[in-house]
Length: 411
Image (cartoon, rainbow, N blue to C red; front, side, top):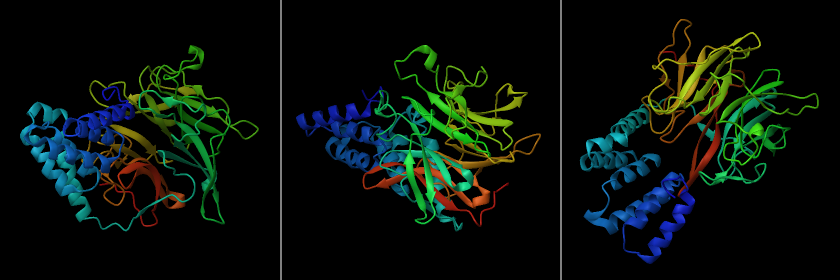
């Protein structure tokens, strides 16, 4: 179950094993592994420590990797560094390389330096109102000049009420919220917004300036439905606003260089709608996920090409956001120098070539995954999806930044 990603079912079995054999280190070790996979980093550390105490010298050598990862996610950087180094000492070079522990050590050292030298007066705060929940909330798309927003959530009232059998969490839906000027927060959250949401994964990624055209990601592969209504993988779709002010049925882009049988999604477009960037794992044997670019040709799309390997890496590049004028591309990556997990970077389109990606620093990034960055110059605000750690658990929430004093770095 653990190997299949069914962590909640695996957790139940490991707990049962712990009750039957309370002095065996293996049960708390795997309970810790499950909690880490579920982003419950406090619980993961708790059970990793229990396993260490019960196992002594007999415990699995990868315990130091688990301890290091837990401390890393919780921001205990000195303890993370100590345990990562112990893991390098005890594990084979091959296994340490497979677990990318040397890269994780670099991330911890980068984070310590970034935090020590952070002088930016930028603070993140949870977006106010009903957008964030106890479930994962992310992927903000601003609309109507800041009067409304769309976001993606995996909360319990998703259309169809189904759960993904792979990770045992509710499917994604797109939700809309309107800004309450009197209360100064986001209210009236709903996923009844026309025909966008299906029983599968649905994520709105981009809305045109006039609000009449959108691009979204659709994935119905986990559902038992007719082929005519299913996707081959995770596909990028176009959708238009109806005369009634609701979204019409999404249409999959019929372009084999854009949609394949692999994962494609997280599309972002320039304001003129002529250039699109998106994420795919079609070269997953060489790299995890990469960012591709494609331009309009007539009424359709041309051939999508990957961005250069100065931007893409062997790791993950994901959730791109292109500035309306096409000059700056913001994206998340765990393949470049960063603080831990996914960090936010910006790279300048210099016309004939691209500049060098720049980490946005400790004012924006954390030691956990930071993704879905959106910078809206007119509002002097930016938004990001990051982990809210409450006690021993965590979930993805949407945060905002006051960017009044922000200048996009170019070197």
